[in-house]
Length: 258
Image 1 (tube, rainbow, N blue to C red):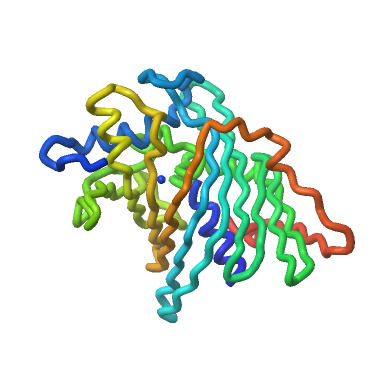
Image 2 (cartoon, rainbow, N blue to C red; image 1 turned 60 degrees about the horizontal axis):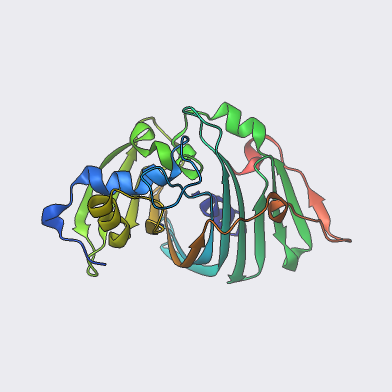
C-alpha cells in the first residue's frame, strides 16, 4: 500500500465565472500558461509564471479490484527550473505525509528518496534515466503542465462544473500510457477570470484538485488548499539527509515504481 501511495504521489506533478462566457481554451490556458517553458519572473503580465508552490494536500485513493479507499494528507512543495524551448522544466518536490502514517517523498530532480520512518527504511532511486526513457510518456504531466495540450486531448468533463462553480477539465493521453487512462483537473475560477478579464496568469494558483484514473480503474484524487507560490523555495530544500541507522534500499528495473 505504501508503494501505491508513492506512485500516486508522483502524479503530479491546482471568484465565480459564468460558464456562458468561458471557453475550453480559456480554462486550458489558465492552467498551462503559468508553467510554459518561456515564462519569465514578472508578476502581473501575461508572461508571469509559477516557479514554486507549497500548500496542504488531501489525498484519496481507491483500489478498484478490492474497492478499498485510503486517505492521506500533509504538506506538498514543488520547485520548477525552466529550461527554455519546448523542454519540460526540472521539477523538485517534497511530499510530507502526516496521515495515515508519516512518510516523506523527496526529489531534487535527479534522485528520489522515500522515507518510511515506521520501517526505518529509505528507498533511493536515480530518476534521471527514467525521465530520459519516458520523454514522450504522458507522465510528463508531472513536470510539464505547460504542455498539456501537447501531451493530452483536452475537453470538458461531465459535468463540466462542480457544485461550487469550479470548471473541470478532462484530459486523455495522446499516447498509450500504462499509468494514466484519464485525468480530471478542477480549476480555480478566479484564475480563469484573471486570464479572461485582465490577460494575466500566475497571480492565482490555478489547480484546486486533480483526479487520476489508471488503466485498471484505480483512482487518486488530490485536493490542494492554502497554496502559496513564488516564495523562493531554494534547491537545497529538496535534498534529503538519510537518518543514521536506517536501511537504504536501491531498487532497479521494474521495482522502481514507475
